[in-house]
Image (tube, rainbow, N blue to C red; front, side):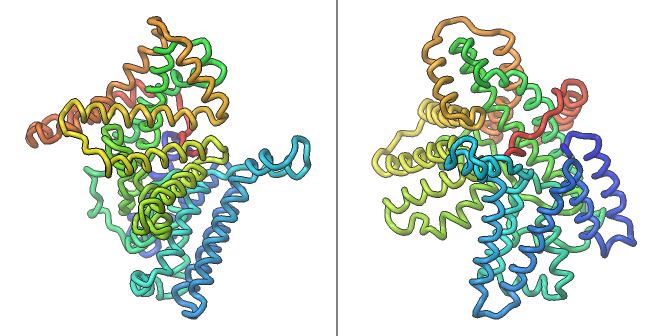
Length: 469
């Protein structure tokens, strides 16, 4: 069920109407769980079995962690984390194992390659891990007991809602248990932040339906072998367009999720913060998919030692985290290469930062932003072309087809639909130079224009890019 489908709008509308009825106020979490099950199973009802399995496993193991014998808390937590990772590995990486380690025609390899990828499994697996780790951590155990020790039924409902909450189950933002579970309480219509929800929903749908869904028809030509007949200028434009598309698609999803969650009284974390103005790779990862980068930092980078065990170990930790982050995105070696590329960029940047002092001025700043954006955009090829040989072929075509001609039917639409995102980032850079009164005066007109564009100029409906991860 897509966010931009009539079925989803109907689900939200009906759930919202029932949710705030007085007789339901003590059953609001149960209603949201029911709505989440309907949402998740809409297209593939059998997937509900996997989601239910995840909820049961995480409910039992996390409950044992904070309420069971102190002696076995670590064993319970480790068991729960392993079960989550094994489930993820079985469904997500079995095809990669079958393709990489078994000869073609082998029955075992064929079986592994036929295992389907359940939508959203990467995201709700991470939710289960945060629940277990947060339940285990001593600084949060007291809080969890206060929140969840009313009864096993109360705890089970909290866990089920946390893992299945439909606005964010398919593609995030990745919510930490210690941020979400304290929010589970009776919600009232009068407490809705309508301004926050309206802006998030309008901007989110604009980014997805107007920008991303129109750009997809142009960036389609990046696919092999279609790019081979294009000139360098056209290829660069398509690569630029795909960089804008993937931002608009994923940031749009996150904003819609935040807006819908807000309608039901829940605050989801910000997931994108103008990433394409980043002057460094470390800054980029504080602005892009923020919930994933903070998850990896808190639950992987810091436990590995972070930057507290010497420079060499810091570089190794960065590489481990980014390569695993790449593998999390997809079951193909190209995603590992993508993670390695970002890990290497972070490590080299950290090394040079200690050795070279770069002067600060507008020209240097612009060059740094252009360098980071260009590197990130080239790396996105590994998402668009999972076959690494096709990536090499694309870059070779880019080098070999240098001339002044270009495909106007591709370049012009990319320029038109990318322009709002460029302006969006530039306005953020100029935010301190614009008076607050001027912003408030202009804001209604801007959101009115975005609504008009959603109604009149949306592209053909398409699944969100991050659904495949």
